[in-house]
Amino acid sequence: MSDYILEFDNVTKSFPGVRALSQVSFGVRRGSIHGICGENGAGKSTLMKILSGVYPLGTYEGRVVFDGEELRFTGSSIRQAIEKGIAIVYQEFTLVQQLGVGENIFLGREPVRAGVINWHQLNSRTQEILARYKLRIPYQEKVKNLGVGQQQMVEIAKALSEDARLLILDEPTSALTESEVGVLFDILQHLKESGVTCIYISHKLEEFFRIADTLTVIRDGMMVRTMPITEARTEDVIRMMVGREMTERFPRRTCTPGKEVLRVEGLSTWDPLDPGKQVIHDVSFDLREGEVLGLAGLIGAGRSELLTTLFGEFGIRTQGEVSIQGRPVRVRSAREAIENGISLVPENRKQQGLMVLDSILHNLSLPNLRQYSTALRIDRLKELRTCEQYVDSLKIKTPSLLSTVDSLSGGNQQKVVIAKWLMSRPRVLLLDEPTRGIDVGAKYEIYKLINELAEQGVAIVMASSELPEILGMCDRILVMHQGASMGIVDRTDATQENLMTLAMGLATNNVEKR
Image (cartoon, rainbow, N blue to C red; front, side):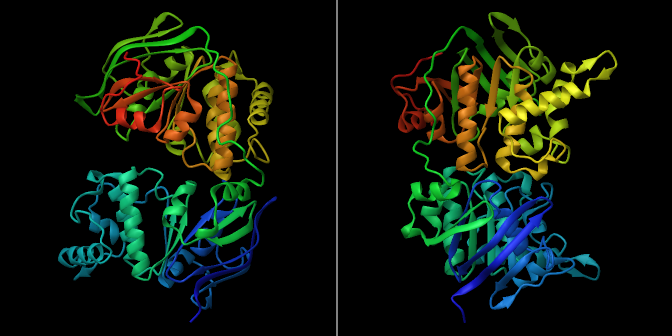
């Protein structure tokens, strides 16, 4: 029996005008956790789609050998991959929120007796799987009542329920808290000890050093190097990913804030789905031209709710005052926000920021049609030229403005979201997790763009769950806890320790109380 459960042999995959993979060759050792990293668009997802049967035999060149046998998937090849023991857990959950844990795990494969679901057998099999892999989930609970971490475990249980020998995890921690990440890593270690091989894909390099045995770096569709994790160094991995030296993680910028642009006084918001629940409590801050104000806090602290309230798309019931350049405004919709010079790049770009099956052109121009409208018609030439300018200035990598957004890498999709709001010429730009799910090279480009906008006088509020990002990019940092402001910290006084102390609801020094 070979030490390798999986081997890629000169795998090459092309799309019209693009070579996504070029002669990729490496092996995955049996019973190991094998990390794969690379920039968005490097070819990681394409390689996994070949492995999991999305792209069947004949659509690519080279060989994929699993457990000594070449994979030759045809027809309904995803089902064939699962039957071979290959399962994938995607970044976006595929769960039915209204169904229970067991119903999700066995969806489409429910045990049946006399044409009726055998609930006793379904529940007992669910408990058996959860116990075998030490997954702590209330097996009869509806998925909608579970936290994100537990929903991730349901996805894993669903994959393992068909006796998977190879489990692929694509960005599994993108929405997890640090404690949930620890639980996930404990589960992966247990799976490894149980003989399950894992392929682990992430943009968070520090995770590979915590969990992986081996690391493969892919760049521009080619395998750069496979190495034991003990031989990997962060700076070398970054250089291999981006193909150049990155001497600093965050580009430098000198803060020279100008006049006050935004003032928020005593802002409170109630949940539109639960009018008795207050989610933002008496938050106050000011923001000046050319300033980047960070929003820090733990998951559930209210950062997204605060930004969407300022954009007019969250709280139906609010109180407090918001002023733009000294003029009181009341924003009750996205249209009113845009008219007042406020734009929002949302946390979930695919669900809230993009029409992924539509063209880049339409995504960019839709919120800005008034700029191209004359009487009863749209000036298509002006629309095209303006969109081309923003694609060029933001360096969005695409063969055409008519390409669909779903054909772009995550980093370029994020640039499309930012570009469409820059076209609205905002005075205040709200950024909610602007670099979530994109690689280190694309992050650096987004950081440079943020700095350039600040230097042009745009006032920016940036929410992020990554403290190094907040510390590296922001001039002042407003820390939130359970919907309330714990104070504002100047970047010269900010450390991960005092920001985390505030995020946990505890007092600390060097804080501007507002």
